[in-house]
Length: 403
Image 1 (cartoon, rainbow, N blue to C red):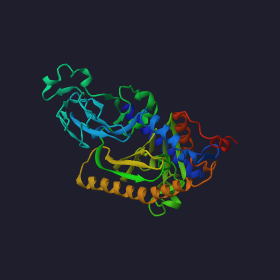
Image 2: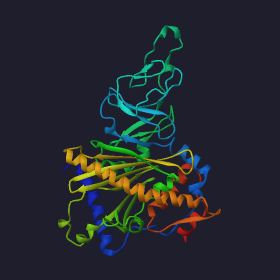
Image 3: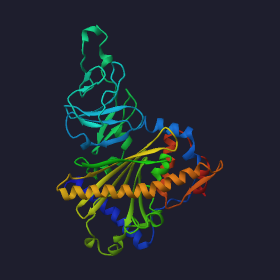
């Protein structure tokens, strides 16, 4: 067994031990106290604008998985932040990003959502660029005299690959320190072994709510018993959580119902479990690793992006086969898992999110929501977001937790 495999298995076993302990002790990882948060955190357009700028244009965000750009010349658009970007894998295998703007007259350069090409050619006048952003073809070039120069190459945006994920920072001509951004969380992401993950299905989920209200639904299992009576509650307990934070990121693990049958057995008799759970990549991405049946895992990404209005959110959802597709039966199962989770999110989580957020807009100034001790991930998440944009949460958010 390699050192990597040993560390991965040690992490997996540690999580199982903690879950088993909580089930036996009827306990859970909990915050020190409850926390109140002013509803303006969800409804204030000034805060919303700051988040769109600081978190979605000046912070690395996940654009896709590495195998969404499977070969040299593969490209895909990244418009999610409101900045038109094309990400392309060069002939040297390196993923790069550029403003999806032709430097001739500003037309949209690449129009297809994804594909493969040797040259990106503008449909307006036919200027063409290679996968490193260099201008390669100009019809009637001689008529531009000396006006076609280094300013005519595409404008770069930072792109980096780590742990099987492609990150982009939607600020042109800037730099990105992805290793500093991920910190110790990089190893946990490596354990998911996403480098060979094969894309199976993608879609978009819309919700009329602030993006943080939608994101909150992924961070706690407290709502399983009430909201997900027939969908998640039969499979997961709502009262047992294992929580770990890594800088601004975190991992949340819920206890599956079957753990009750083996938590008190000797460890040698525990069933084999893949390393899964919910991995939150600051500021907006959820990686959920689950299992259809023993040996058949899948990974789903939920990438939440705010609209221009404070009450608009788009979630880009994709599902992958972590080790690739080994049969059509497996492909069908993963595709059905996509549909099942989309149903739960759209018809349960996002319905209540839209209702709840609309209600928040009607509350008087100074009104608050409350996160219980079991909603530990939400407490930390809101504080890290506020810190990142330089706008402190209203004082009420700290009062009860400090008491």
